[in-house]
Image (cartoon, rainbow, N blue to C red; front, side, top):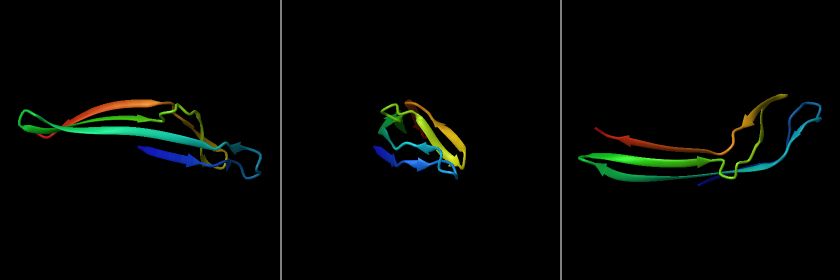
Length: 79
């Protein structure tokens, strides 16, 4: 589990734009098992669990959009 909190951020040099505070939560799980004679790992992850939308500051007047909730599942095996 991961929790990231960002406080209010002044987004321009003249203090005219402010990005509000936000909390982003992510969770994940990993399960190791044998696939025949080989070791394998199944991993599931959900980022931005609460589906928080907003902006992230990249520089003075430069912004990046925070993606909504994203779920992913992957499997890896050693052969």
